Amino acid sequence: MGITERKIRQKENMRTNILAVALRLVKDEGWQSLSIRKIADAIEYSVPVIYDHFANKEDILYELSLDGFRLLERTLEKNKRNIRDPRELLKAHAESYWNFAFKNPEYYQLMYGLGMPCSGSGKVKPELNVFRNHIGEAIEKIVTDKKSTDDETCFKIHAFWSVLHGLISIMMMRCSDIDDSTMNKKVMDDTVEAFIKNL
Image 1: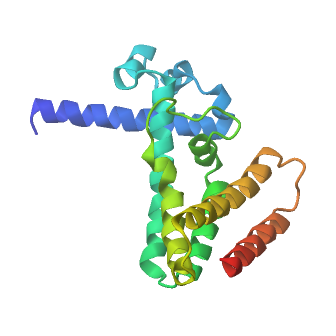
Image 2: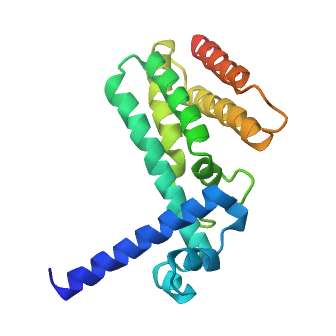
């Protein structure tokens, strides 16, 4: 390996390390407490080293949000490969979205701006539509026989996502008021079931 290749690999490794440390700090202390200084202290480098790899904290948040979307998409793609029936696929996508949110709350909060500004302000982030695109495909297949218009189909996709995101947001943002996560999961399951029946 030449010097140039080694430098490129070292730069990529440092960038990966910065992101991993930032996520660990967030899991320990929350998004609001994340700072460039804390990241630098944790990796035992000076602040300018962080700025060699990221323009600012917002840049780090943006990259972490993309990691979250990629993680979610892998699960949705697995569902798509393994489930042919669009109704069952839609249920699986809803389940995966719910599970992703509560297994990875730090990512979910960042990806959708829960309790914090959305990352990547002013940047186009097509990844935001990862879940929408997957549920959209399933819903389009379900409503094909009913000859729904494009506007009706779009409304159904938006409504389905809104319901799921709303339930998750309520649980995440008001967890001290809501003790029974089992009850909330049942609300989600029943809502998804009823929604699919009414498609």
